[in-house]
Image 1 (cartoon, rainbow, N blue to C red):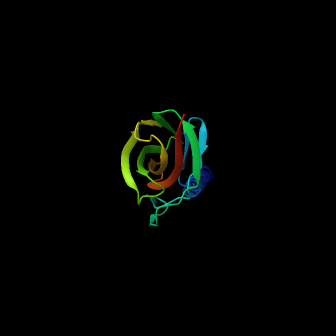
Image 2 (image 1 turned 135 degrees about the vertical axis):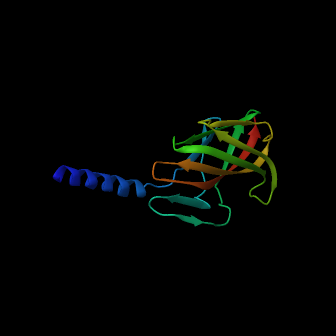
Image 3 (image 1 turned 90 degrees about the horizontal axis):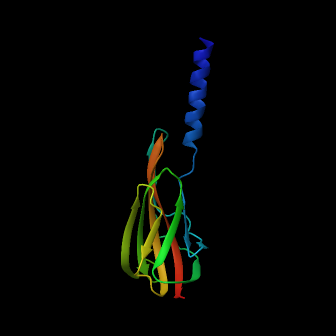
Length: 150
């Protein structure tokens, strides 16, 4: 009987530990340059532990200048729990600019090549869809780059 109680205690600890996991994040590199992201924007998280969403204004991202050849390759890094990376590329410094391109990376894809980013400032809004054993959700971050063709 004490073995069964011990098993339940271990399972309970695993559940509590998995409920405290942070939401997944994503990083971006262009031509070997790491591009810092904004703070987390809107998100939703549901599962066995809790369910909550938060909506906010589009996040502001720090500007990163990059000299790169065209086409521009966006290299993302995210954990295996991330099933989809959706990106919207805006010409300008925010979503008040012109949307020039959208893309979806699925099934472990982590790179996207664009011919639309040819020079200037671009706001890249990225949404992640993720799933783990006890919870799932989506979250978003932004990146701001200034592309100078090499």
